[in-house]
Amino acid sequence: MSPIVLDTDVASRVLRDRLAPSLATKLIGRTPIITFITLGELTTWVELRHWGPSRLASFAHWLDGVGVLHSTDGIARIWGRLTAGAVQRGRPRPQNDTWIAACCLAKGLASAQKQTASVFSSVPPFTNVLSTSIGPPQIDQKQCQQCQERDANRDEQNDSD
Image 1 (cartoon, rainbow, N blue to C red):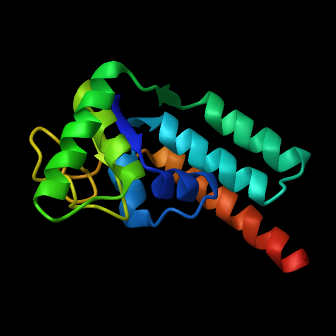
Image 2: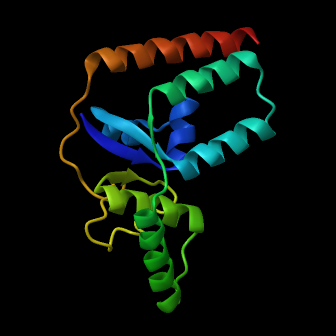
């Protein structure tokens, strides 16, 4: 399975089972990875919402299934070049999105960045699967069935609340 770097928005939607089907199909068969930035943002989000033990355990379990890209000197230099170039063009970019893009560029990985789907797509060899076509989706029928069962269980829980 090929790796894909999830930005914070996409990762939080995956974590909360709220990813649109059109986005989910682009991630099927890919190994999810997050950056240190996304880990920090998700941790902030969890802390601010005062999650209870079961949700924290679910979050920890989810994190166990994803890889985390940590910063390096090379990534920091790429981030600096991206940031400087954007400022020089009069189009500064959000810092955290730029860090995620720098991680992807340094490691040669594709990204799923929802909010800034085309922000870095002009930077070769940056690839954002949410702004480019990656061919026909290969749907994992077992995973789809599990998603349908999960959604039905969630609907039943919401009805009983």
